[in-house]
View 1 (cartoon, one colour):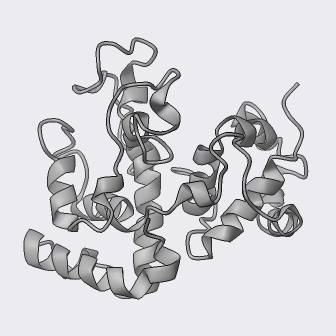
View 2: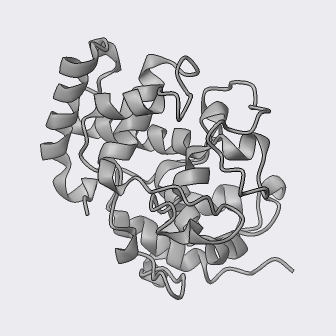
View 3: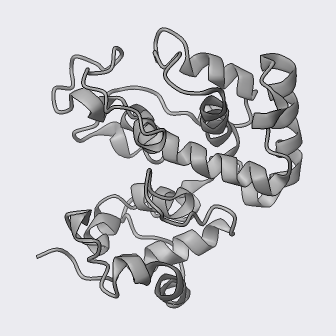
Length: 247
């Protein structure tokens, strides 16, 4: 699978060319360098998580038009998030969402790795996905960049059977204490509106947490680690899994 951090330059050129040639999008929304492509991908990851929070749009009230009737566990805005159908591991019905409250039977997005950005934008806006006119030009580009160029071999960093991160706990502790602890606290129980602890979240759904470490939290001042080697995020996740669980 594609890892941006190992093949950054090659793919960036192809993505930018495809946007300009196939969409007619203005050059102002095209990242000017490889580093800026990384920031576009990270923002796209936040849009994939909860697009309406990122663009500060009203929370959708309706259940998504393509949400399967067989799943009555989720309704309303919960079904309007890209991750709700395609999963935090981007594998859809073949991944972590093969069962549980988000089981939909919908496919993942791995076939879109390296796909022309214009093609992905068109899919986002089609009648199945129904997001045409709901975001700005740059938002669609960022989200498409995330799908095309932001996927990585997640099974190389999280053991799918045990849910345990494949990382260096000691390094993760250093990263956490210098980058994360100021907001999340030494025990990962901050802020209070988190609702639980990072230890609990990281052990329950590590695929979600590694994506948030890499891309940030929608509409929050949380740093994104996307520009660093993916292993850094896996190390942080490994340390988070040692933090206290909610009582």
